[in-house]
Length: 391
Image (cartoon, rainbow, N blue to C red; front, side, top):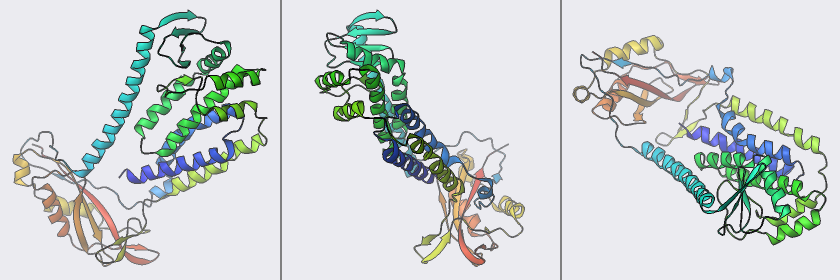
């Protein structure tokens, strides 16, 4: 059920990163680029959730709930391992591992603070430590090896005043949670470069040539810790080119071009219907998941609920084990209204609940078939049946 949303997020983030790469990358619109790169992931996550009312009105997969009762009080439903649970567990496991990696990196910073020589100053804290190969900052702390040259200090202070650490931690956490999205990693990388462009511009002032020489001398030779802003952040060549670059032309056009892109994305995502025809491999026919006129049970939803309530028998095995929960039944309503290809999807409850759900749906009378473009078609349908034990 999450797959369509994940694909939409990938599309949105890919389009937004493409706009940045073509229109904004390597421009002198540093503050604008920073705001855009921070908002692009948020927009990518939110846009796929928007759906216009006229689309929701046409959705045919309306979930119905049917309850079965017994004289026995039910305990919490049990669970059984299945592939879906395994995939979710694997995904969450990777997220936890990445978040732990962040925590371990912060722990290293904490050790540098405890073991280093700390000196408080106006607006920042300087920490001298022999393990620091090149100066870097984290929030209002500046870490360095032996001496802190004036250009380096100005650079790191620019990071501190700009609250760049917050941006970095936000992107690290986002990439940990959405680790499947490669565009978020590209956005994180570009945001780090924009931070360096901003700090370089403030630190260089009117001595750009001399500052470029210092930058080359301080080029980072080892990996940096997560969330820090390092003076020698690679690639240095790109930073020097940006430092010496002239003001970007057509800045207004580059900025407003995102408006039609955002409107198109909104229209596409908001009007997206989660249905297209799929092929039934057994009968080699088109099976629709969304149609103009969905199939209906004879007499409508009220009669469907009445039929299920009067036909379902709570399995004795499930009653004895105090098992309850929702069984999702998937089936096809054929072009002739007949029910076929009945199976259950989602979490497996066991104790006869799935078998009883399949039996009841298989025994259904013919439905009124769905239609698309005036023609009766086969439609994929989902029906949740909730088993609940109540005294």
